[in-house]
Image (tube, rainbow, N blue to C red; front, side, top):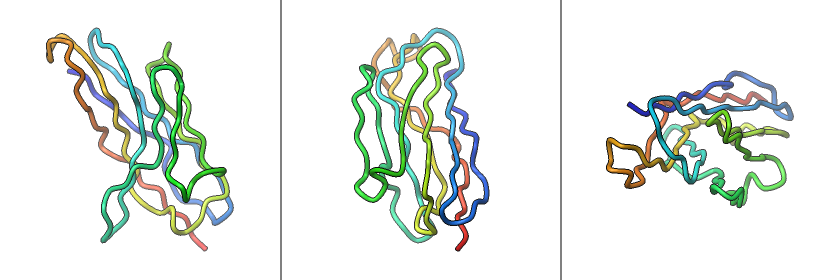
Amino acid sequence: QVQLVESGGGFVQAGGSLRLSCAASGSTFSIKDMGWYRQAPGKQRELVAIISSDDNTNYEDSVKGRFTISRDNAKNTVYLQMNSLKSEDTAVYLCKALIGSPSTRWIPYNYWGQGTQVTVSS
C-alpha cells in the first residue's frame, strides 16, 4: 500500500530553478534512504542524489553545487531543490525510497514513484 508521489516538475528556462517533492503515503512504515533518479530519452537511468536516514547526502558529479536534497521526516517527504538548471538536466525525475513495512515483514524494500518531467529550455 506504500506509494510515492512526485510533484514540482515543469518547464523552465536555463538558469532557472525548480523544487521537486516526493511524499510517501500508506499505512505504517519506516523510511530509510531516499533518493532521486533521472532518465533522459535514449539514456540510462542515473542516480541524481540520495539522502540517508541520518541526513548524509551524496550527489552525482554534474549536479554538485546546483542541486540540494533534503527530507522532512515528519511529512515523509524528500525534496530536490534544483538551481542553475541546464538543458542537460532535462529528464523524467523519479523518487525512490527504501522502506520497511508490514507487507514486507519490515524488510526494507525499494519503492519508486511514477516520475515527474523536468524540461529545461535554452
